[in-house]
Image (cartoon, rainbow, N blue to C red; front, side):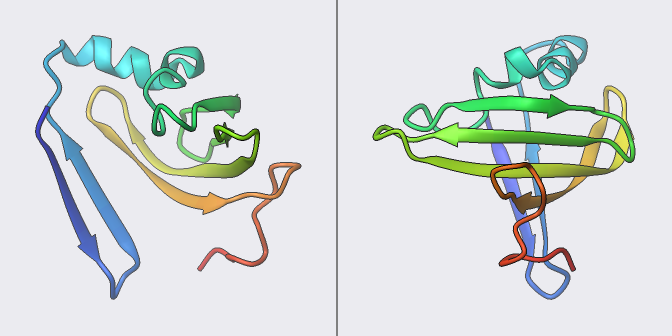
Length: 108
Protein backbone atom coordinates (compact mmCIF):
# COMPACT_ATOMS: atom_id res chain seq x y z
CA UNK A 1 0.00 0.00 0.00
CA UNK A 2 1.82 3.12 -1.19
CA UNK A 3 1.54 6.12 1.14
CA UNK A 4 2.63 9.66 0.34
CA UNK A 5 3.36 12.09 3.18
CA UNK A 6 3.79 15.80 2.57
CA UNK A 7 4.85 18.10 5.39
CA UNK A 8 4.60 21.89 5.44
CA UNK A 9 6.47 23.09 8.51
CA UNK A 10 5.60 26.75 7.92
CA UNK A 11 1.85 26.07 8.14
CA UNK A 12 2.16 23.16 10.61
CA UNK A 13 0.35 20.76 8.27
CA UNK A 14 0.86 17.16 7.31
CA UNK A 15 -0.95 15.55 4.37
CA UNK A 16 -1.12 11.77 4.15
CA UNK A 17 -2.41 10.04 1.03
CA UNK A 18 -2.77 6.28 0.83
CA UNK A 19 -3.58 3.91 -2.01
CA UNK A 20 -5.57 1.00 -0.53
CA UNK A 21 -6.38 -2.20 -2.45
CA UNK A 22 -10.09 -2.15 -1.47
CA UNK A 23 -13.19 -0.41 -2.82
CA UNK A 24 -13.55 3.19 -1.60
CA UNK A 25 -16.82 2.38 0.17
CA UNK A 26 -15.15 -0.38 2.19
CA UNK A 27 -12.26 1.88 3.18
CA UNK A 28 -14.61 4.68 4.22
CA UNK A 29 -16.60 2.27 6.42
CA UNK A 30 -13.35 1.24 8.14
CA UNK A 31 -12.49 4.86 8.95
CA UNK A 32 -16.08 5.64 10.00
CA UNK A 33 -16.48 2.71 12.41
CA UNK A 34 -14.38 3.12 15.57
CA UNK A 35 -14.15 -0.64 16.19
CA UNK A 36 -12.71 -1.18 12.69
CA UNK A 37 -10.48 1.87 13.01
CA UNK A 38 -8.99 0.45 16.21
CA UNK A 39 -7.72 -2.51 14.20
CA UNK A 40 -5.32 -0.39 12.14
CA UNK A 41 -4.79 2.96 13.90
CA UNK A 42 -1.43 3.10 15.64
CA UNK A 43 1.39 0.59 15.79
CA UNK A 44 0.62 -3.01 16.86
CA UNK A 45 2.55 -2.52 20.11
CA UNK A 46 0.30 0.45 21.02
CA UNK A 47 -3.29 -0.56 20.14
CA UNK A 48 -5.86 2.22 20.02
CA UNK A 49 -9.21 2.46 21.79
CA UNK A 50 -11.64 5.11 20.57
CA UNK A 51 -13.94 6.49 23.26
CA UNK A 52 -15.59 9.02 20.94
CA UNK A 53 -15.79 9.05 17.15
CA UNK A 54 -17.90 11.63 15.32
CA UNK A 55 -16.69 11.61 11.70
CA UNK A 56 -18.57 14.76 10.66
CA UNK A 57 -17.39 18.30 10.04
CA UNK A 58 -17.15 19.94 13.46
CA UNK A 59 -17.10 16.49 15.11
CA UNK A 60 -14.46 15.02 17.33
CA UNK A 61 -12.74 11.72 17.95
CA UNK A 62 -10.99 10.86 21.19
CA UNK A 63 -8.75 7.87 21.70
CA UNK A 64 -6.00 6.41 23.78
CA UNK A 65 -3.26 4.00 22.87
CA UNK A 66 -1.97 1.49 25.40
CA UNK A 67 1.71 0.58 25.40
CA UNK A 68 3.26 -2.79 26.10
CA UNK A 69 3.84 -1.90 29.78
CA UNK A 70 0.33 -0.49 30.35
CA UNK A 71 1.25 3.15 29.78
CA UNK A 72 -1.23 5.26 27.80
CA UNK A 73 -1.02 8.11 25.33
CA UNK A 74 -4.19 10.07 24.58
CA UNK A 75 -5.14 12.07 21.54
CA UNK A 76 -8.01 13.65 19.70
CA UNK A 77 -9.01 14.75 16.23
CA UNK A 78 -11.21 17.79 15.59
CA UNK A 79 -12.78 17.39 12.14
CA UNK A 80 -12.19 20.53 10.11
CA UNK A 81 -13.68 19.06 6.93
CA UNK A 82 -15.27 15.79 5.86
CA UNK A 83 -15.99 14.80 2.26
CA UNK A 84 -17.56 11.33 2.39
CA UNK A 85 -15.76 8.75 0.25
CA UNK A 86 -13.06 11.32 -0.60
CA UNK A 87 -11.26 12.25 2.58
CA UNK A 88 -11.24 14.33 5.72
CA UNK A 89 -9.16 17.03 7.38
CA UNK A 90 -8.47 17.08 11.11
CA UNK A 91 -6.70 19.09 13.72
CA UNK A 92 -4.75 16.43 15.60
CA UNK A 93 -3.70 16.95 19.19
CA UNK A 94 -2.55 15.33 22.40
CA UNK A 95 -5.19 15.02 25.11
CA UNK A 96 -5.42 14.89 28.88
CA UNK A 97 -6.97 11.87 30.57
CA UNK A 98 -10.49 13.37 30.35
CA UNK A 99 -10.11 13.96 26.57
CA UNK A 100 -9.60 17.71 26.75
CA UNK A 101 -6.70 19.18 24.76
CA UNK A 102 -3.36 18.93 26.54
CA UNK A 103 -2.44 22.51 27.42
CA UNK A 104 1.24 21.66 27.08
CA UNK A 105 0.52 21.40 23.33
CA UNK A 106 -2.13 24.11 22.66
CA UNK A 107 -4.07 24.38 19.41
CA UNK A 108 -2.77 27.08 17.09
